[in-house]
Length: 395
Image 1 (cartoon, rainbow, N blue to C red):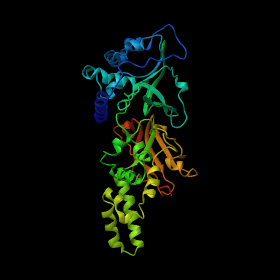
Image 2 (spheres, rainbow, N blue to C red; image 1 turned 180 degrees about the horizontal axis):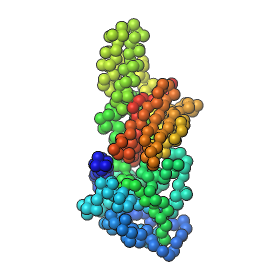
Image 3 (spheres, helix red, strand yellow; image 1 turned 30 degrees about the vertical axis):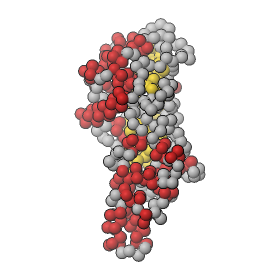
Image 4 (spheres, helix red, strand yellow; image 1 turned 180 degrees about the vertical axis):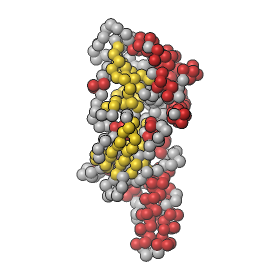
């Protein structure tokens, strides 16, 4: 559990740094209620203020300057509310609230608030993968439009209800001005674009090189790298690790060398050497096998969407029986069956998940962190990433 707190705290610190540096709104949005529900009784602000289980949330809401909004009977909100246990499990004790800047706390809380809507648990969709709802958190610079806000993704299945990949532990806490659902941990807002992570992660250097190779000769506007760096996009990336690429490329290069008549004893170490660096994608001698078009076909096969802007999928959204899911390859080859996906759950958490490409003999495994179930999914401004241990092959 200590490791989980450390990992989560690092994620939160990164988010806080970006939030502080970006434009953010101290107050939640001013929603227009679609209808009134309870004109009497406790407001969301009243519940947070009087329930001892929400003492940390109360301190955070007060410091962020959001209590007036959440106590306003003329506004309607859905609040995904971490209780004290959730804050503690996230590595955010009560003492941290007094240290963190008010703007940072406000942005974190705003990502837990859906304005203008009372979303009952019965209304949370069970449709794959989830439903997108706009939160009160304004997108950071370079966005300058206060109406453009971060989205969160509630979902529901036989394994439970979730906000993104965080389990909801209690639902439908009714209030005069909306409804609350209790969260297992704090769900911090994303702070980077997909490309920010792919281009800087030490274990995704091959994926970065493959994307750059796939974009060769493509105008900037049409590049996958551009989409991975853009607002308004929702893409789910199945990211093979460096070892996954090295294993595939070593085998492919070895077979090609043997077909050319090179002895196996020479071919294998040569293949290992060529595949030992991401520069393999820029080696002209291999362009016959690693053409930009071939690499692009493989890369887009690792994006869970049949189009852009696409969909955002978390591991908790994956089906428990083998199911074919469309990929971005289907935007060019509509009849392609896609990738076979399956997840196994232990309670509300994913214990194992796999993806199998059409030409793979075995399935790839999603890399699960047993010390931190939330590290399986990496949430970004424009999508999510799940790391896998094998490259998926479309044909």
